[in-house]
Length: 398
Image (cartoon, rainbow, N blue to C red; front, side, top):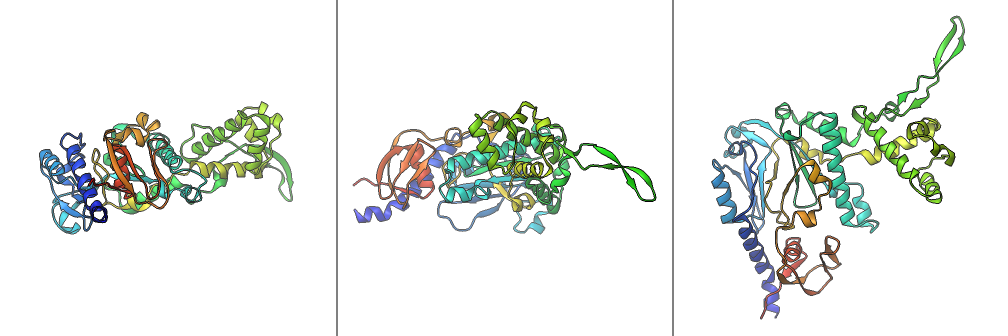
C-alpha cells in the first residue's frame, strides 16, 4: 500500500496529461490575430523551465502541438515580432503589443478577508468578476469609447480575468503609458476635492479697498451620472450607495448610515439622491466620496499591463492549476459568468482521489468537498480540479 501511495503523485500527473490530451483532440482554440508573429510558450507537467521562443506558421501546427504534447499551461505573447522564434528580444524585433488588463483575485484588498475567514473564496471570485465587468463597461467601452470588437475578454482558468485591447491606437503605447492607464483605474493620485461639481452658490461680501465682491461659498454638488471619467464613476456609485440604503427597513437603514460614519435624518430620504447628497454637510459629502472611491477602484495587475513582452494564456486552452478552460466571454456573458459551471469541460464519471490537504477545500459552493486525510469518489470534473490544484492524488487500486 505504501508503495502505491508513493507513486500516486506520478500517476496523477499522467492522468491529468491524458485528460488534457483528450480535450485538445477536439478543443475549440481561439488563435490570436497575427499568431505567426507572436512568441509562444508552454509549461509541461514536470514543471521546470518554460519552453518558449516557439514560433508557429500555421493553425494546424498549433493544434497538432497541443493535442500531441498536452502542456499544462499554454501561452502566446501579447507582442508582435518580426521574428518571434529568435532567442532574444532584441533579435525578435518588437513591432507592437496588445494592451492587457489582468485582474486577479489575489490582488484584491478583500483577499485579506478570505485569509481571516470573513468571506469565502467564491465571494472573492464574484468581486473580481464584478470588477472586470466594470472595467469593460464603465471604463473601456464607456470612458475610453472603445468598440467591443476591439476587446477580447477571457476567464483566465485560474483566479481572474484577462482583457485584451487590440485597437491599433494602443499597439505601440510604451510601458509607462500602459502603467498610467492601470493607475487610473485604481484611482491612484486622485484629488477627491475635484470629484464634485461647484454648486455655484455665491454671496456679496465687502472687500477693503475694492468695495463689494461676489464670493463663492464653496458648496459642492453631485456630478451628473453621465459625466466622463471618475466624476461620473463616483456619481454612479454614490447613487447606488444611497439607493441601497433607501431600500432598507428603518432600523437597518440607520445601521448602514452609521457604518458610513455619516448622519442623515430619515426625512431626507424623501428627496431624490441628488437632492439628498447635495443637502449634506461638507464633511459627510467627503466621507461618501471616499466610500464610493474605494468601491469603484479597479485593480489590474500593473506589471502585466506595463509589460510589452508578456506571455498571456491562450484562449480555449486548459489551466494546469485548475483543469478549467480559459474561456472567451463578451460583456453580456461576463455579467452572469460562473467559472465553476461555465469553464468546466470534464464530465461526471466517478474518480477516486486521496486528499493531501491539511484543511477542508471545496470546488465551487456545492460541487465537491475534500477533508484532510480522506479518500473520496467525486465527479471527474472535481477530481481533475482538486488534483490540478495539488490538493489530491489519484488513488491507485490494488
